[in-house]
Image (tube, rainbow, N blue to C red; front, top):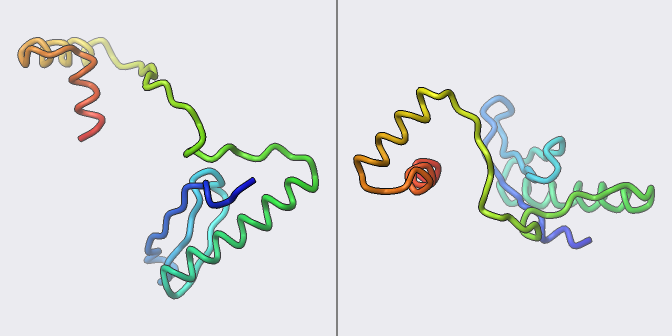
Length: 107
């Protein structure tokens, strides 16, 4: 498993007054550090150790988001009133409801 394929993020933690390194595929893991570079290095090291431990114990390792196939489709349940309002907006704009929803999600 190549840990370079995982999705990392570094953000500021006001409560800790430090940078925090995160990995989207392992939401329970984090690493605090004084600099963003150290936070990223720290979370990568923790992830390397966790993945090695999971491999040793024959545990399922999450697939990196970068390696997953996404169909571009998902279902969302909304109240009928919201559905109607969106359908009206789409009709008024001369576009499909799908295009309107996609634009709203992207924006």
